[in-house]
Length: 495
Ligand SMILES: [Cu+2]
Image (spheres, rainbow, N blue to C red):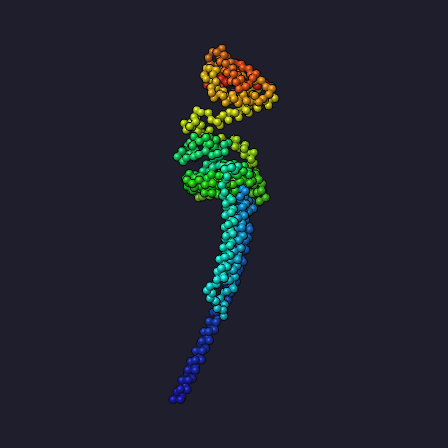
């Protein structure tokens, strides 16, 4: 029995020894895997750190490399008075969010390095810290409040509407698929009223109300021209879908909403010419404007501001581009003087004209301007005498009775003669060659006398009159147009 127990003990010991041997073998294997795992953890943690460095370097280098392509940097400085405020706002936001961006990325990757899995280190369960909660609530609150408040202040400055007392120009842009209709107020400085029910694509694309005198001088140019340094209010409309009135160089961007007029106020601070000059230092603007033509100008010389639609409004969206020219005030006045009103060139004396057959104030002013300029030219000329045709003096057919319309021209003429010294004025009457020659001479003499009498009533003295009948034609008597030109009243000014 004792022998049996002894054998059993030996067997058991052998089994235990074998088991222990196998156990340590397995343990050694496991330990080896852990080592492998630890090594790979270390490697990953270092890679993450390297990624952090490369990522931040990439962010800064690409930001620096491409900064000239962003609004507010390099060649893209603002060309309006409020533009640099908006650019400044973006820079402040970039500065603060940039700091947070850098700190959070460093913290994220540093933590993944520092707290990687390691032998003999146990994760620490961290359920709550009131202090930390307070810190990461309060700090962003202050930063955000600061950003929002300073942003709102600038936004309110930028979006402030004009005071009616202000000196400003109001223009209008109406977007539709796919163009902008631009409207300027003309010499009265006021845009006329509109009604969408009056829109007619052929004769009245904006629905202007022609009974409103403010509409009479409004004109519709194909490009925006504005003077430097003057406040501009843009009324923005849309006739169909959402568009967006975007002047990138002036930091002006506003939706054009059908049925809801919007506006924007801005003051251009640089002329197109000045802006082009400041681009000439940038290599990308020294390239040829037309790469196929070695003779072509450099890009900075051809620079133009532009209006773009910044809403994807349909497939012809791109064609909503319009040029914007900023010029010196004197050049602007000259441009304004060259524009002709939509009403005068398209509506006047058509069946759509509510003032058909009536003389408009604007026409009287135009006649005054024309007569004054001809009169001044005659006075300033070197020749001792000059002839001016009175284009707006009319008589009843076959009679020497002045038509009522003639008074505007004659009143102006009276004041011009009264203001001038050292001149003598002769009124001459002319007819066409129809009818009896003697009768024509009498009629032309009577008409010249009628003008003299009218002017004498206005205090003009020393006038003489002569009738030439049809003896001095200025045009052919074979056509109605020519005969009309020959029937005329003239003045001869002698110094
Ligand atoms: Cu559009």
